[in-house]
Length: 394
Ligand SMILES: Nc1ncnc2c1ncn2[C@@H]1O[C@H](COP(=O)(O)OP(=O)(O)OP(=O)(O)O)[C@@H](O)[C@H]1O
Ligand SMILES: [Mg+2]
Image (cartoon, rainbow, N blue to C red; front, side, top):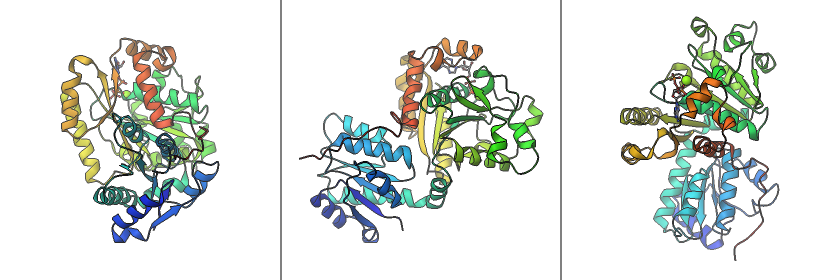
């Protein structure tokens, strides 16, 4: 069984956690004494293949959060709990921890029951998806992000193309966008591309598809992004089987840092097949109540199918202040935690028609700012090279 590592802990907290967790988990608890803040320390800790890392309370909170962000960026399948110095302080530290993708937040003073249930939940979530998670870690370390919305026209193509361009600015030539709207996909159009090849050519090519052949069918975009565009004729989309899509996503995930997948509205077989390869799902809802309700149903279906390994991001598009509050009420009552709101802007259709993503043509606009936030959540604040200071709290 994968271990539960206590990193940057204190003797007192480690003893309390050990005493609090269920007996079945006790055997898996290990102290990780080398500070994960040192260069190489984090890598060797992750090589121990933990199910869960409990960070703190022996570290400065901001350092603990940075470590969580790093784990989240590099090994999203590893669960993280942060133990903060204190939970008060306007909640900003807690928010920072949640934004870093942690599964639970404790304080050094949390009681035994809270520690027990938080650890149990986090380990359960990590273990439930062990086979898939290990497979993903072994095959690739790419972040694979699928954009989904139950309703058509919610803004999937706008969001996926801008997200991919944003990620490419951090990882030039390391990002590929795949258009899985196989009949009417317009990723190429949104990026102003004239693709010579499409996913149809990749699937119709003779012999077993490998990454070298697949790369011949990608189209380069000026932002140093690659695109695997949808077929230019709807009938050609029929040729693209679910198996072929799975193979393509697997090959791209093994080679690129990021794969961004635009999908057709609703839940197609093809989009569902990509979920298994995804580390992140962006659920996109338009600014109307049915749209949010449909989204809640999709999320409930994912829970029922135990498709819960992927990090979920809930994004509300065309959000404006006028109807914002009531919409957020609906979202909350449906159990959706809206992470990001993209405002309405007349520039969006204009940039779409010009084939010039708004994140490039107007990077400071409110729409671009919102999309940059998602780029950070998925791509990390400044990537893997972010330095960490070695600091211990008194
Ligand atoms: N934030 C926004 N402000 C203004 N217009 C927007 C915004 N987001 C999307 N749009 C517009 O909404 C329309 C649909 O967007 P888009 O094509 O991205 O949706 P989609 O979900 O990909 O649609 P489909 O389901 O047809 O693939 C486009 O004309 C686009 O310009
Ligand atoms: Mg679309």
